[in-house]
Length: 271
Image (tube, rainbow, N blue to C red; front, top):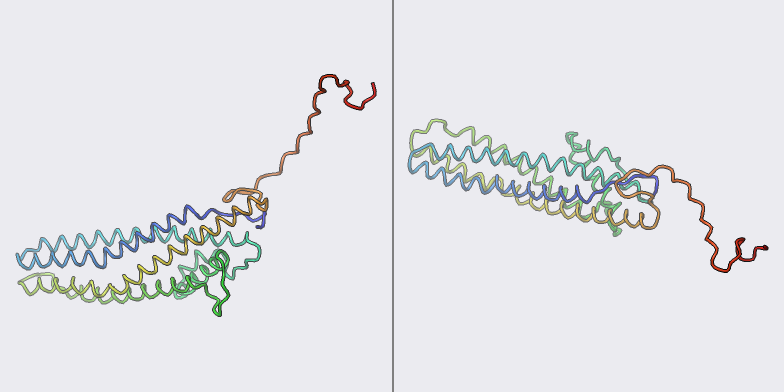
């Protein structure tokens, strides 16, 4: 450990990131699978009764689920990026670790169009290689990072295509319902929604599991390494706190009081 480089705690924020990533995956299942199935049932009821009330309820349910999913996605993105930044900054305290990407890319790399298909993976690869035990391989990419990023990109592309088709089909739905045929189109629409989003949902769940594994392993490895450096005296301050100020001068040792029968000058001192 380099004692002059401050370290950052990653356990707490890592746990929060894991919880939020799992919540996003669960919300994606809710939005892409559960809600469309429920709405299909509501659309069937509307067709049987020729009442638009169940369709209005379906629209409200869909809107509420989408809002919940968006809120969880934003929260997970913020906490995950904070965790990445802290984990990357800790690399500079580990001797022998030379990350290729700067810590700032753990934030900015997500917001550059097209480049955000590569930069976050490179940053995560630096974090994983500098924190976890590395087995030499022909590839320079840490295996878990490669699987996680491939699943994330595939799920994003699949969801994007599904959303495009979904919006196109939704725009063609009739606004004025004149008979059972118009209601049937809503039944068919909600039924096809499940199939469109299924691939993206399954792959996103796999990406979430891999992300959680990476976060937990890296957080534990970095915390243990920082703790060892602190115990061995290679870190002069606790993890997550700034270096202390100048040490106070040591107090002079006190002279022990003379015991019984000992001259006032001490043993061996001439009287």
